[in-house]
Image (cartoon, rainbow, N blue to C red; front, side):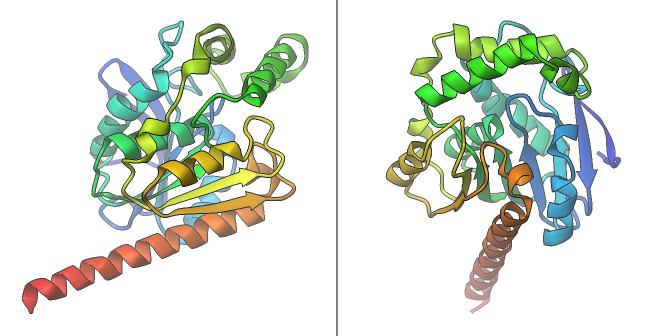
Length: 276
């Protein structure tokens, strides 16, 4: 399909808001960006634009069901809602936009979704995965920070701030936080997927991340057989692309360039082998 710079993807009963920045998939590699638990297209700010300018790749950003201006989600969300996104919706999105090669770039819940996808799909189009503040297990700090956020949402101006971005802000915030706070989420564990990821990973985490400790990084280092690079950024918390934007852009851009360069070198070597 011909993709406009912004619009909606219709996938069955889902209508998903998106932006596409820069060259399309038939012209350059594509970075597919997966937002955080309360994020959406707009809440990435100018980070996708800066990433496009720095890498020359096309950048595809979308709002998941129940976020931004996308169609509403069925509530309550099940414990497996990120698994469903990774194993059902994301493959359809990649095929619909004509994805040919590139990387997944996920933040928080989006990083967890990217990890699930990488560990459950041997997708040779994916050259690497960037995980910004990922969750692989639920820690005490995760639950405590989500509880603090929910209290702030119910009692402060946070609701008004988030209402700028989401068509039904109550459904978005309560539908997401209820899974973590009221469900049996302490059993939620993604470590089984990590051993099956076959492409290089970059994990970017703020030193002051209030939603996860360095245990998240250690789990990836222990469980993954693929190369795992780590950037632990001082002065950043859970949203390093906003709290340490220059450092985050630099480490992500350098990783993407290196991965794509290595992939091209491998492709050329394989092509030469065929003809020798």
